[in-house]
Length: 500
Ligand SMILES: O=P(O)(O)OC[C@H]1O[C@H](O)[C@H](O)[C@@H](O)[C@@H]1O
Image 1 (spheres, rainbow, N blue to C red):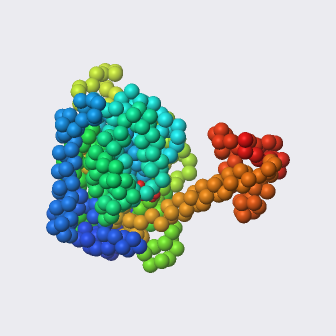
Image 2 (image 1 turned 60 degrees about the vertical axis):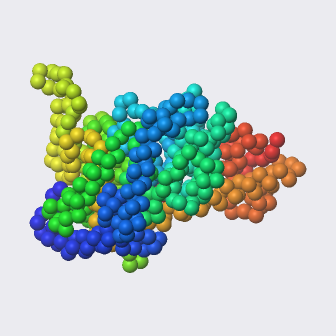
Image 3 (image 1 turned 45 degrees about the vertical axis):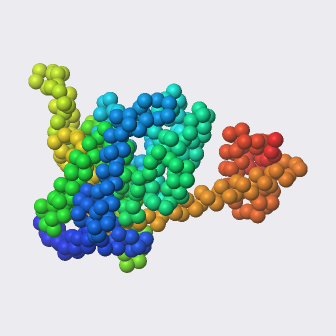
């Protein structure tokens, strides 16, 4: 990054404020004012920091419960009714309740884990089928994690209902296989309690979904896969200690935030391309996409001014991406900066030579350096984050590094990083479409003759929603839901709709 000392000096006062904001946040201030919530993900890896002894105790005992539970599952002390051991996990969740567990599974799951994990992170029927098909013959030994902080998100609710039906289809009592991870008192929690599910683990209102990997959300699936959660927490704690220092030049998270500010003029003018040169870190960019974009992508600042902040994040892995879009990075529109994630250790065992004195790991390392240099020569800046190897401790540390960098950057640009008001609009609009669908079906049920889209719109009292109605009937038609479309699909005014 090409910033100079003058730039660093200019930003110093903003950093003084960011460090002070962060200290308040860690002490339990209402750092998420809109939702009137504390922001406590740092306490999860250092429970002594929590603002009350009760919270400290709750965090400590949850981690212990998770370990004891995972141990009992591994030894078979807790086993399915008709099998000696659980063999698989279906983890159902979305957003912050999926991305951390998915990233960590890919990064850290052993080659032969005690339980194999499968994720349902959408309401895509074909996606759900795919997972259910994989485990069909082992459903009687498959645990189901239903993860939802709010306990009311439609996608995991739908996944749970479909998976529950699959269990019923094999005459298995879902409750004997199901575990809920959610806020106490949520709809999901009440369901799990009343149906007497196998276990329930708490998620807290003071942990945001996108920073929940070190809560039960991430720790339960990780522990079940045999991942060392104590080391992950320890790595995060060590990074928290290193990034708590109110000294810009010696604080790696502050240096990241400074670089982001420099690259995008504090207005997100450049996108963050995340390129880990290690297959197991492939999902880090997707994980960071939510962490960074949901935290920083805000219309208004803390004083209510319209600012349209954010930083776009994308990327997969190197050197693979060099054969896809690095051409544009090197020569095309210069609207990005790259973050290279370098891993020093190639593999656990010695590497064979590909050519005299050269291994495939040497190539990977050479490609990272080469690409970095080629970009720099063309005035494309980059950051390099280096870890010695991919393990529980370094993955915990990476997560913590970015948690803190996002928090500090949010202070620099004066926004609330801990709410997501923009997400609601899409959810409300989707709910309205489902209501409209019900009305459209009622209209068609009472119709004597085929109706045009315009007639349906009028009869359902939504004259201005012809396009939505078109999309609804087309979807029902494509899925054998009793709706027949007569006429030309490409010419809306010729279409007649009837129920058969
Ligand atoms: O864990 P849940 O309450 O089901 O939420 C899952 C996700 O959905 C929401 O729409 C939020 O934007 C995310 O921040 C959250 O992680």
